[in-house]
Length: 313
Image (tube, rainbow, N blue to C red; front, side, top):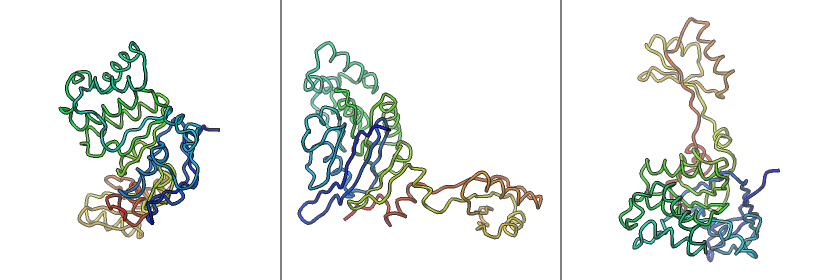
């Protein structure tokens, strides 16, 4: 049986009459990336704050690394690392000094601390800027330093609350690579994000949170298969070929300007082969074809009625 790093049952949290978490259940397998996906205001950060002992739930039970967050908060904190939405670096200190501060706070021996600081600076490609003030760092460098600081205590479970918000595409992909490496080294990642591509690229399991409730959960592929819209797009070179194809495959939708025919499909090899065989029976060849499947944008829109860019009220 796969070990669970995080479990939550019936998790509830409200602020006065506003319900933020409305009885959610979570099961996060050890050694995986679990992504909590949702728009701003959906309750993602509140969930992280409860799971990391920063906030007390109004109801439900939570265990992290085998410990109850309500009664064993100290043990939970010893097992986790947390990187919030905004880099928690001291801009008056250098990168090296920020890491050394974390070493001192963790009570790590001097020799071990120097080794850890050097290794983290190298791992996050911050060695050249180690003696520069963090105030001179780019947004991507700050995020890398923030995550490096989180790793000083070698946590088994790492919470990343929207770690790539505000980063340029190159810095975001660098952060993705770092996250994958952490899991390869045995860490469990609990990732919150409003970037659908990020969840699709990284997550083993995705839970969609909307207005305090989980509306779906599964692997990215499982969620995408729930949504209709998979189709094969056939490309032709002439209008005459498109006319013929449209007669052969009347269920297709034609685009005369692009010279394409869009045909509903389950995306399986058997159905795609059968489709091409139908064209072959009439000695008609498509110049090319592509298979299109719904992405997590389509999933989120279908499940919630809006995109992740909408702030939940």
